[in-house]
Each structure stands twice: as C-alpha cells, then as structure tokens.
Image 1: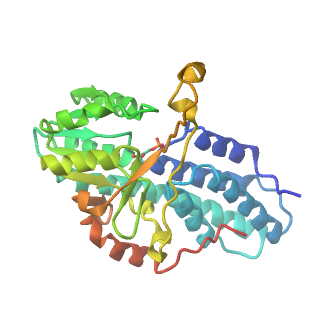
Image 2: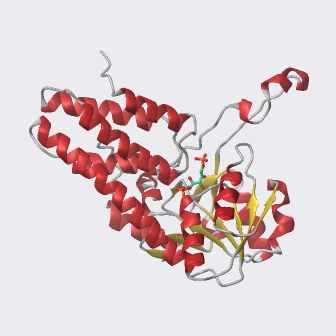
Image 3: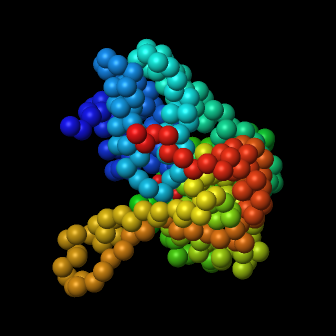
Length: 316
Ligand code: RUB
C-alpha cells in the first residue's frame, strides 16, 4: 500500500508542479516547509514508520519538476540532518533542519546580493531574463548602496515571468523597459550587464536556466556585455561531478499554442523545453554567497560542499 503524505504536502507539490510556486530558491523554501509539515503532522507510531512517511513526502516533492537541483539539495539537507531512534527525536530533528535550511537560504541570498551588487555601478542598465530572486537580491543590494539602476526586462515566453521581474523593479522605482524576447540583441548595446539566475549549475560551470538564457549569453558575448549568473550554492548540482547531466523539463504544448488554435494550424509537433544549458565560456561570473567564481572553477566549491557524493538520502 502506498504511504499517505500529509494533504498540505500534496498541495505544495501540486503548486510546484503547476508553477504557482516557482523559481529554484522559492521551490527549495517550499520543499523545506513541506517536509517540516510532514514531520509535524505525522502520527506514525514507530521510528521506521515515520521515516517511511518522510521518504514518501520527499518522493512526491521530488517528482514535481526535474531541473532545479535546489529541490533535491533541500531534501538531502533535511535527510542528512534527520537523526534519532524515536518518533519524537526524528520529528524534532527534521523540523529543526527544515527551519535551519530556510534561515540559511535567506541569509545566503542576502550575502550573494551584496557580492553581486559590487559588480554594478551607479547609472548602470541591466538586462534580465525570467524572474530570479537571486538576481533581484543583487539589484536590491545595489539600490541600498545608493546606486541608480535601470532595467531592460525580457518578457520570457511562454510564461512571461519577466512581468514579475518588471513589477518588482517598479516597486523599487527602477525604470523598466519591457521587451519581447526576440528584441534582446537589439537592446544589448544599451545595457551594461546581463543578469540571470540558475536552476542548476553543472560541475563544468554550465548554467542551466530558463529557456532563452543560452541564446542571450551568446549575443551578449558577441556584443561584449558581461553576463553574470546569481546563484546560491543550493543551485550547484552534485550529480554532475560524476558525469550525470541535468534533465531539462519539457512542459505542455498548451503553454505555447492556444488549444483553440491547435486544429487550425494542422499536424505539427510543438515542443516546450522550459530550460537550456549555457556553456561556461559564455558566462563571466557565477555569484554565490561564498563569493564570485569564474564558471570553470565552480567545481572546487562543489567538491568542498558535497564531497564526491551524489547520494540520494531521501530515497528509501
Ligand atoms: C525560473 C528560472 C529562474 C531560476 C532562478 O524558472 O529559470 O531563473 O529558477 O530563480 P521557472 P531564483 O519559472 O520555470 O521556475 O533565483 O529565484 O532561484
């Protein structure tokens, strides 16, 4: 019989899958919250039953979206910290670990923001793609330092996460120009930096981020505009140290073509990859809470943080 997970955990998983909860850092925060809920609401009578429930909850969360490694990294953190021989002991350690993880997540974003802000000068214009809270932390820290910034924001089809970025920047009184994705090259001459986030960073320094990032990076290189990735260390993908590649999520074609128009177009294939891979040679710096790194040297930090392991302690 399948182990039941707490209804609130199933709800959070459904919200991640539907992208009501989205963005790698926000997904990580929600996954930690969900594990804490599962631990608190468990009525397991034995330590073994409690662990089985926690594994089931982790499995439901893990299966939501495949590309953001922040999700399995969250599960790993909580499971590695879960300790005890009694239900109460395990419960307390899981709840404490989830809370600690969330606190560290917030602190890491603040620290990363300070580091990223140092790359931005007063009067700079930045170009953004998608909506990244790590990128916005850099912008916010630069504004707090008294720098004036303006932004060219790509809308980011098909889900238009650029609108969320634009709204946030306007709340901070940053002048925003919203453009369609295909206009990016034209506007690169007007900007000083391209700022993007990451869902995963591979051991070779490749940046896996919202579809369109790699094309933007190629154009930015051609124009000599520096491209910076803002990514907390929970975006580092330990599995890539042992040769695994990052799975790119393919989403529903209805995000691309309105189902009402589908028949009229005729018999075509529609594909909707949500992410792409930008090779390290097209990225100038990866900014983390541990400092900024040239992409090619990020593996050193990965080894320090994860060792050589890519184990999955959340799997039973
Ligand atoms: C979001 C996306 C973001 C990264 C980083 O994609 O690609 O750039 O997740 O975000 P989606 P953050 O909208 O499909 O989840 O810096 O907030 O972790």
